Each structure stands twice: as C-alpha cells, then as structure tokens.
Figure 1 (spheres, rainbow, N blue to C red):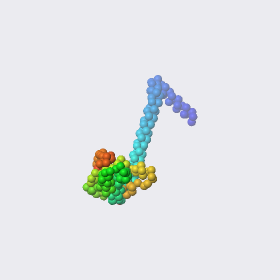
Figure 2: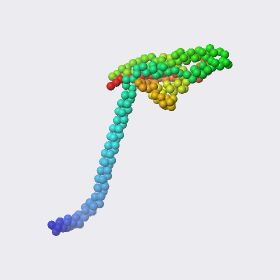
Figure 3: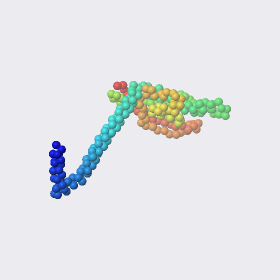
Figure 4: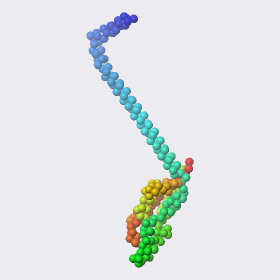
Length: 226
C-alpha cells in the first residue's frame, strides 16, 4: 500500500515540476498565504460586526427596560393622588414668618412710636391675604390622566427661604431643612406638578423689608389607577 502511495506522490511531483507548470505552482504557493490572510480578515470583520450588533441590541434592551422601570415607578408614585393636595400642602403654607416674628418683637420696643404700620403689616401676614390660592382654569381627562391648569388668583410676597421650600414641594425635591431634621417630606399622595408660568419681582415692604412678589400657574396631572 505504501509503495503505491509513493508512486502517486512521485507522479504528482513530476507533474507539478514540469517546466511549463512551474510558474503556476510557484504562483499558487505565493498567493496561498495572501488568500488565507484575506479570508481570516473577512472572518474577523464578520465576527466583529456580529459582536457589535449583539452589543447594540443588549444596550437597547437595557435602555428600554430602564425606561419601562422608570415609567412604572413614576405611575405608581403618582396614581391615586390626593385631589386636595394643593389645598393641604401648598395653599396652607404660611410665608414671611421670620418677618412676622421680627415685627412682633418691635411692638414691645420703647423706641417705636408709630406702631400702626407694624399692626397693619402683621395683620396682612396673619389674616390669609398672603397665602397661595389657585383656581381651576382648564381640565382635560383621558383614560389614564386628568390634567388641570391651576392659575394663581393674586400675587403673594415671600422671602428666599419660602421660595426654596415652595419649589421643593412643587418639584418633588425635599428641602434642606427636611433632610437635616430627617422629617418626611409632604409629597405623599401628590400629583405631578409642573410650573407653566412664573414671574418674580423684588420689592420693599412699607417697613422697607426686601421681599419677592411672585405669581405662577401650575399644570396638575393626576394619574388614574390601572
């Protein structure tokens, strides 16, 4: 058997090394590695493309899952919101308490002769004239959400601390005071609130205290239960 194989290889060798077939043989030997390298390069590119496609699909799936999770958490947080949230948590807020306490301390000061201005200012701060009040202007209801435009009835006066606390409630960010005292923020049962219009001007009170006069409109979204 081995003798026959040897004869076969000898015939192949004589065939390839004949003078007129030598260039073809040498060309085949020289181009073979190039063809192998080419096919390996194509295979690697195909593999890299497949890997990139797989990675992109995984990123898209992860992003879609995160969006779905955030949406479900958002709806769970805001569904069945308290319809009286604005009344309880925003329209009940008292502003300029620091100024009010300062004015009351001045009433007992012997150097203050004309106290009528102090009494009038304190009355303004205590009788509810300087509290937020909203009126429902536009209402739109869908299967999943009720949207109400809440328009502020009249301007109010606040200081910088009042402004920070007010915005923290509207924007769902607990104020620094709540975080330091470890008190729960008043956001439970809240609808989604978006500030649509906001204006603020700096002014001086009749007693020359510096305050901010603000007006704003809110969009209230109440998400219905599933």
